[in-house]
Amino acid sequence: MLTRRRLAAGVAALPLLAPMARAQEAFPSRPVQIVLPYPPGNAIDLLVRALAQQMAPHLPQPVVVMNRDGAAGAVGSAFVARSAPDGHTLLFVPALVASVLPVTQAASGLQVNSFRPICQVFSNSMALVVRPDSPIRDLADLQARARANPGRMTYGTLGITSIPHLAMVQWLRAAGVEIEHVPFRADAQVLTEVLAGRIDVGSIVLGSAAGRNDVRVLAVFDRARHPDFPNAPTAVEQGFDVAPASFGGLFAPAATPEDRIARIEAACERAAATEAYRTAARGASQPADFYLGREAFARRLAEDVAQKAEILRTIQLN
Image (cartoon, rainbow, N blue to C red):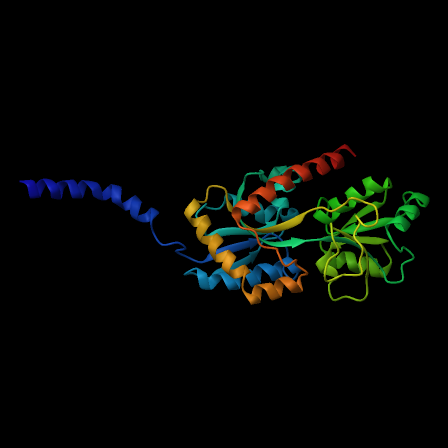
């Protein structure tokens, strides 16, 4: 009788055990997909592919990259936000996914808390560039020329409310001048237009000027000079307190379980420490201390959300 009771109890418990078994199944159980919400072929695309390649040995499944461009990053970001929060679909994007897109791409449904930060693996400086033969020699010169030619000067960026655009908005406010904004889709297009003389200056990610001798860096928007551009003065050095943060890395949908976030973070940390990824990072003009774990990344992200909100309010008021 006792044996039959135990058997009956065991059979009754089977429906309860099945969900527990599924919850504790090995992760990842299929390939991990990292979505990059921008076109292929740029510096951030090279970084995410290098990271994915180095993460794969630390996860028992392939790690693949998918480009899903559109709406300044909102299309791919919204796709990940709507994905199952199981750790198999991740997002590789700058911090603007939390600080800018929820404001500028409200129709996408993105919110400040749509994602959980996993690891920071890049940190960029912005810069103003001109043609090598440009008569504009420094920021004071640019300021004076803009005052003398109201409405006649132009600058290009990789898009409205991109970090290079917000950097230039900050500088224009500090300088007390107006220069017409001409948005493009990529830094490469901005550089083409600068070199052709169709726009006066370009506000770009500094790494986009790496290895080029056909542009001159007028100013770096950062607190200190970049080691790859030691002769390029910062805006701060030139009397303008403009040093916008631009950083990013891996994110997951907000409801992703803690244990899976921790597993991905561990793989990310190991990947970012490899010489292969660091070589890719150096090629993209990354600083030596680009990596942050999820807790430090989350703190930096919260600060950036507050800082960018103030700038975005100013743009809307204008």
